Length: 268
Image 1 (cartoon, rainbow, N blue to C red):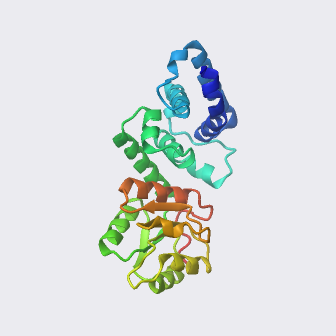
Image 2: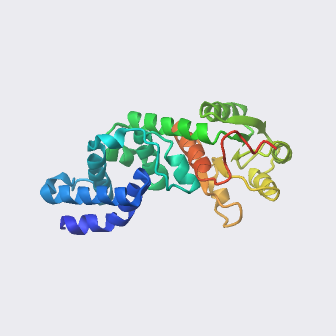
Image 3: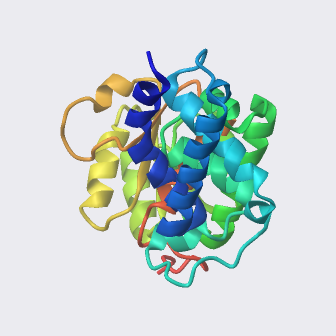
């Protein structure tokens, strides 16, 4: 198969990534053009042993990172207007790449590491750094709905390491609803099966009937959410979970939540 047929399908999404990375349509497109020119000069630079999308992003990343200006902490484009775009410009360059590749472009950690030419340990470091920087922008109040004390403590430690505050650990549906109405958290982490046999899903439905809040379900029973009913499982983590996964998803949920803001303004 020709290189053209391999890389052409990747270009629309690659242009999206380049524009988000640079904060500018013109700059992003120019870097994609530079990648294509490099490819014409050296066709062997496209790694055919990789999935074509991974290979295209890997080649683009080499071109991007070869420009020393792209490694500087820029002030960000004056035209940035969207909530996500304003938050993105405050993340340092390498961490920004790792976050965009996993949270926006949907690459696995292993593929993102290949794209950036780093090992998984370094990728996790970059994602942690992105998470901390996002937390500094959108420090939030978090409600944990979890009936296992050790798991609840682990989640509290993870959340607080990102700069957020846990307002309570609820073990039942009634406790969760009461805590949510009292503290109006900016994020909810919810298990499905709770201590008294009640449902974390029902607790979340009750909470969402009062106010909107992003929810991350963390459960050993993900099939419980495959009902097509509200709340939709936009963010779902299966137990046993990995710390890196929880950190990444918490950051992703708050990053794209338009109502989240620094200073914990939800603390009514």
